[in-house]
Image (cartoon, rainbow, N blue to C red; front, side, top):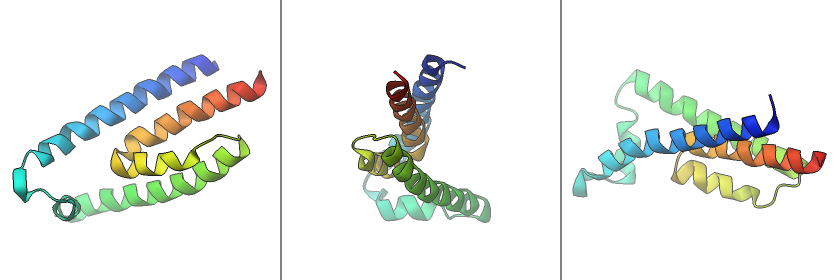
Amino acid sequence: MTSKAKQIIYAVLAIVGLCVTWYFNLKAGALGPDFSLASFIADNYVNPSSASIMNDIIVVCVVFFFWSFFEARELEMKHWWVYIPLALGIAIAFAFPFFLLMRERAIERRMA
């Protein structure tokens, strides 16, 4: 697969990750004064299934932070730290494919 094809796929997946997560985040925020960060977190632990998924996402985020730090350093990618607030503030479903897009661009630059 070409680098350009990978970049398109990563860009599309980042957009999908943004849309499918923020649709529900906006719905949660529409709850009005009952919505808070504490209630958002508590809502993710309402049963064992949702707690499992939440814990899975937390582990994926931690692994992503460590891996992307070293990968960005190796590829001399600037502003690595921006992926942490993107993952925590927007969604790992957005930040991870966005990082892969920027990583692919960095690899392409190195090969040029």
